Length: 321
Ligand SMILES: [Zn+2]
Image: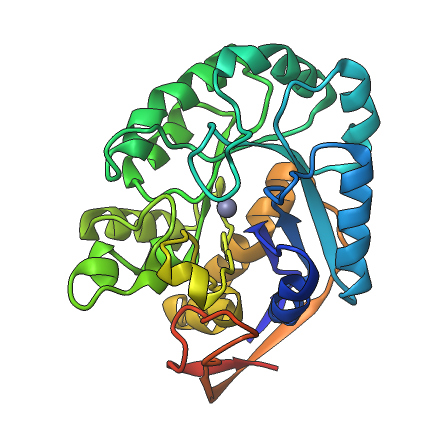
């Protein structure tokens, strides 16, 4: 099967050696990806944006990084300057996930920024979790999504890595809300993480949830819902840091082989989920690139640098050429 211009709408590449280790797995499967800015220090100014983009381009070919910057109280001049060179601004509530300590403490503080983003047509990307009980955090954040969607009706808002399926109901209520779905929230539940032997490599934020959530997310994806897009949230950590409890699933190596099995027999919906929905919703224009998968047994890598991939060693029926 041939996919046209797959885009990963949510990707963590890190920097330096880690980036060089993991990026080949994304380039091999995707024509473009939205690159998350939660580095230390964060990507939140022009200089940092340019040097990070250069690092990615220096380590890739036929690949378009769509850059995000980290939300802070930007001035109008800064936003005017950044607008042409970024895809979106990523909002992390303070302290919610990896390197988000410098995130937003109160949404009201960034209202002037959102006002200008709305005017300039810069989308808002959101890690939507509260500080509540781990299984309730996304559900509790729904009111924030609704408030943002109401207060900024022309601002395109992406609910990232939806794991609580009820959030998807908001897509119908608010025209300006969109959603990304990861491989792990689409295919796993909390049982895979903690139902038997603990598997820290499936630990991420937001945490993978119930079988009912999984089934409902799968329904939305299978019906090719226009506002639901693939975003892997592939987030590599060294094995050492994973065993210390770092949150993040490194899914990049197995994405297309796993999705090819999930979408078996329905390449049209696969194409929408992996590319067309995103390109249409956000007018993304990147050089087209065809990615071919053949039906041949393929084994996921056991290790990539110092990182253990999702489903390391698992056999798939499809292989990326
Ligand atoms: Zn992420």
